Image 1 (cartoon, one colour):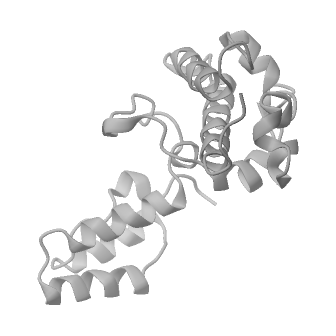
Image 2 (cartoon, one colour; image 1 turned 135 degrees about the vertical axis):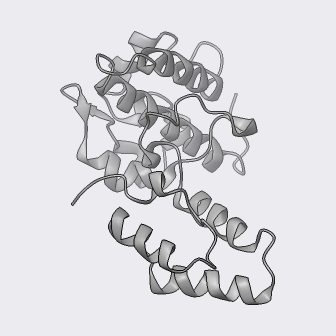
Length: 191
């Protein structure tokens, strides 16, 4: 059964998101106790997208499939797009293409705001830039009068990125600014 063309992009993004999350979980399955559960959860998401009798049906089958291009998992979803050749895992590690191509297609998979893996998955595995932007602007607007909103926007424009300590000092020195994004999410790696 073919999916309507208007739902293909969404299903494609869901499958890519689940594949990236499962791939990352596979790479840290010995260090992170919840990683195997995440792989199982994402196997269910992939099964849902692929439909009955298609695609990987067990976590081990999913991990095997992630070593091959995504178009082999769901050919009908990837027949006409550049990302069809994306391979999530290479020799058990995330491929470089995951960062350049896969992260651009991330969508929120678990509704209701409850995602048990957010505590240990990196933000790029579960949060699309659009979601980050929407959350930041929601927090800027939340309960702010016009002057506060202007001050918050000014802070974000003037300080779009920086080291965690630097942003904390800037935020602390400007008491009128609300916390836009939790500092634990501001810097996810050291350059």
